[in-house]
Length: 238
Ligand SMILES: *[C@@H]1O[C@H](CO)[C@@H](O)[C@H](O)[C@H]1NC(C)=O
Ligand SMILES: [Cu+2]
Image (cartoon, rainbow, N blue to C red; front, side, top):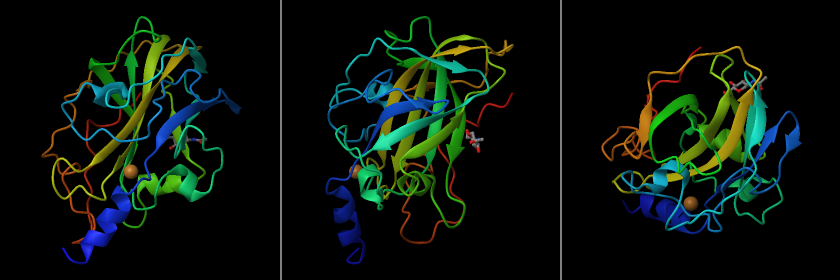
């Protein structure tokens, strides 16, 4: 523990993150436009909190009236920044490099993306990236200008969805609570697809994660991670 303590303190210091804006087809819609952003960048650590769905108290988010149009089958990019006011793209402008863990993305079909809280069932996973033996998913975002690439499945039915982009930081996850969950929800309208699929492998937020999940309660510093199990369900496949 003597060796680990400085690392954990460094991680605890301040360097959190926010999914601040969504980029679609090369167009960035702007901070908080179509993405419900909090003013404070802190994590949620309680996996039973309603704030695990789309963030929320202790980090209340601002509503937005924008619903961003996305073509089914298109890739969108969640843009992560250290703070709402951070405009740079150096690694420290994204998230502290101690914040190693997976990236994930989920969709939930809703009647009105502007008003649906996101709390409850109906979420299906559309992307995740864990640890490949060398690099964590979050490191690709930290060293990739905060860009988190997410494919919207081509086969899902058109309509409004909440897009929940997430990064989990595991630097202090040896005990639960300890893992830091960072997530915001974008409001999107999926068009153009011929899809009709309603994914069956859905989960709830809160509910999808447990404090005992091997990907939530894990000491990543020692022993070396060999087979990281990403929390949540399998990725939905068309
Ligand atoms: C689209 O996003 C997925 C992740 O959901 C990624 O694996 C893929 O490389 C991306 N494709 C392009 C062309 O960027
Ligand atoms: Cu942090």
